[in-house]
Image 1 (spheres, rainbow, N blue to C red):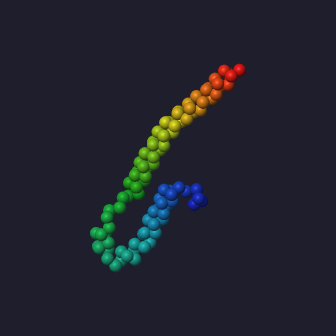
Image 2: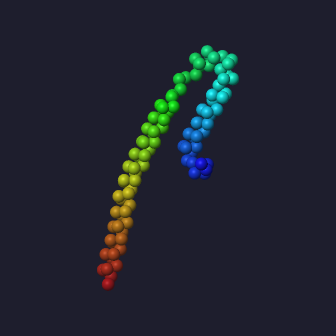
Image 3: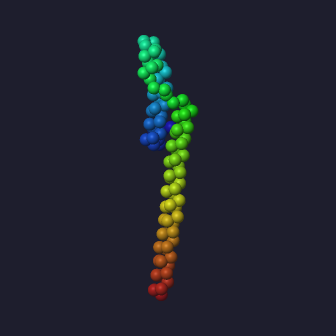
Length: 96
């Protein structure tokens, strides 16, 4: 994918995924020194399924909001254009 075509949110998600992918490679070196301290200090991470569910939920909420805006403006703007056209036709026919 081209970086120019990604939104800032998508780029942040990709960066987070790359950091997670690098973490297992870096973890054995840190984990070999103090495995119990690292395990107790690290908070419980969400599973990939939980993260995916959260991502899907936020995307669904954004989609619903976008659809709501489209419905609101999708009716009003064309109605205003048609009203202006009707007024123009009415004014132009009354001059003659």
